[in-house]
Image (cartoon, rainbow, N blue to C red; front, top):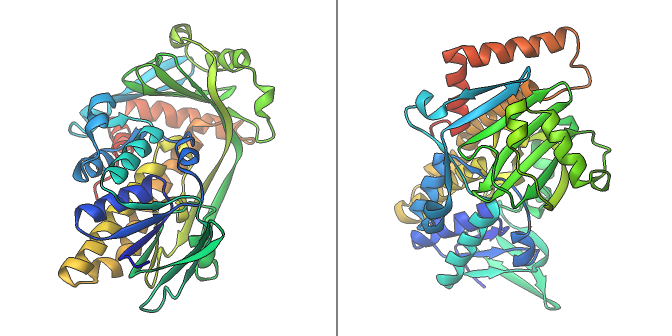
Length: 390
């Protein structure tokens, strides 16, 4: 087979890139080692920056998002037994974030790709990348007992942290990582959110908590837990009881509980791989960087990578210029590191660390107090939360 751009990975970043390239008349094929149902079954992020929403509108995959997405105008911080709203729209000139589950977004992109008759190859095994530093890149894979080959002009590695793209260039990159000494126990439930237009972050002596939503009748809740905890140790009742203990009394009373439809424990890490371009191979999304979910930046950073990459490839094919390709890594990493900084800062501010006691605890309390009582500090939080300008 022959295509202009071979995209490895059929998650949101790969699908979004494929849609943007298709809209520009650039041929592309997506390879995915899992099934489509497996991809849709991954429960991930649910908060979209305006940049991401604009990208979905740009590629014409926004009808259901506009109909079902719920706009958030504020976030609320709970500490010291009290709740403190930060009105992000008023602090950022009207910018907001939108609650819309990653599963739904992925479904929309899959449907659009299928409707356009574009090629996605699922269950592609043993994918390998060749000659990407020359002029004739090739991607090989196995399916149905046979080996297949895709010749292309460029390869986009959108296949995540454990994918073949980053592994192929592991000896050419510098990796930066911070692993956090706790995890997030998350519960998804078909219950109305405790706060339909705000995301609630809690800092309590018992640890961090988060109340968010996927829709008006589906909620996502988290509590900080030890890394060695097991999901089976946490009954639904234990989870709801623990969540209430970490919130202010008024909010705890409002929580509508119900059976969990998904429950998991996720470790937290900050990770960046530099650079993000290797000849005609590009890394995008989780293949190049991971953020702790505290700042809701993972999916949005991936969308920004895709915007830069799509623009660079369109510029190459339509304008015969490689300026965007040559600056791709630099432009992405500048934004990546700012998002990494924000996610690291918010994680440190809202969680209890093993050494968060004494002086460290008093400093954390002082910073929270300053944050909610200083317009400048609240504005900095709001600007980062809604997404920094491109």
